[in-house]
Amino acid sequence: MEDIKKYIGTHQDRFLKELFGLIQIPSVSSVAEHKDDMHKAASYLADQLLKAGADHAQVYSTKGHPVVFGKKIVDPSKPTVLVYGHYDVMPIDPISLWDSPPFEPEIRDGKIYARGSADDKGQLFMQAKAFEFLLSQGLLPCNVKFMIEGEEEMGSPSLGDWCRENKEMLAADLILVSDTSMIGIDIPSITVGLRGLAYMEVEVTGPSKDLHSGLYGGAVANPANVLASMIASLHDENNHITIPGFYDSVLEISPEERSDMARAPFNLNEYKAKIDIAEVWGEDGFSVNERTSIRPTLDVNGIWSGYTGEGSKTVLPSKASAKISMRLVPNQDPDEISALFAKHFESIAPPTVKVKVIAHHGGHPYVSPVTSRAYKAASKAYESVFGKTPVPVRSGGSIPIISTFEKVLGVKSLLMGFGLDTDSAHSPNENFHLECFTKGIETISWFYRYYAGDLASELD
Image 1 (cartoon, rainbow, N blue to C red):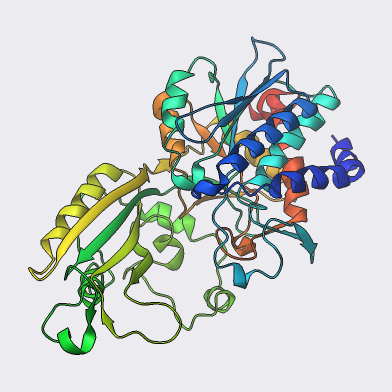
Image 2: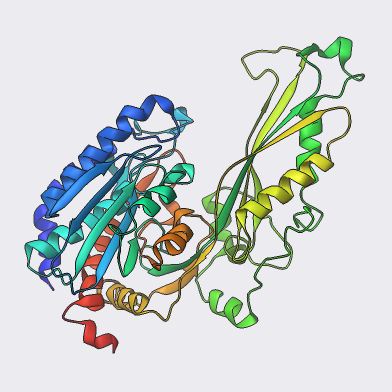
């Protein structure tokens, strides 16, 4: 299939123009003012799928943001791959830290800089362009369906119900996802595990209104001080989470599996230098890679209280709030963990304040088998493009809907991601390597040949 490189070279300018058209739509799912942009992005994608060769592509309404569904049925008797992706993106704050406007894609140093370039519009477009290439050459060996949602960055609150309502339409043999990363640009890897998520919000209230800190300070509990103390108590001196029962269901990894994970290249000094820290932090007894993949965590994602404007205002705040996420590992249930968190947080509050705990979205952890035919086909595909056997890795991130797919649709997912740790996903100056974009298209094209095409016999 040497023509894939030529095809990409011939059409790369068009590919990028079409991708940029999608990136320029500010489809921030969590911000109400972008509701119209969500519909605009969905319609744009449906049109792109039709241009790529889909027989059908339509925008479907949900309880929240719309879902795009498209399909190409080459032969009902052949396997069906359901491609999943998302067109929504994270908010752009803080805008002052961007070197170029976040929704005006710009290529610098071989990278596409823009919000959504890596997560997930760029990676989603790789799937669409591999699909286009295979169809144009008469090489598509199986049926392909697309399901592209607009709420992944919010925890996919509407997609589970939509999948249940459209289960027959979504019937497939495999769900193919490009929304994860590789170890390095020349070190291919396949994500075989995702952590789950439980996302909470807490509010601590003291007096009924902000007070003069001089007249009341020292006599009235300060909610900001109390909240800080409560949050600090959620970890012990070994950075172990102190919520009773939190670790009860954690699946412990065998020494053999830990040894296999340790094969992944890792340089501690480079890791620290890359994010400008003097030292790493985490649960005692585990390596950095283990702390970010096979162990659960608890982190403050945002905290606010009192006066934060310019200059000074000496107040004792009435309220203090925080948003807290817990990344979960196999066997941990997000609903159970949310309940444990709420019970514990309320129990450690002093009588000087009132506490409110809100459970937001969550998702179950997911583990994908490395013995499946799909994984073997993907491994061969990466070898064909990168010249190296990919390393199986467990990601520290979460894609909550993946575990829902298996429960609702009864189908396993394969995570073929091409992002990099340096992409700054969710951060200012998000970027995506052009080399990863083009190699992604190549690798996905090879995957279809190994999975169901003329090279499938090599897996037997």
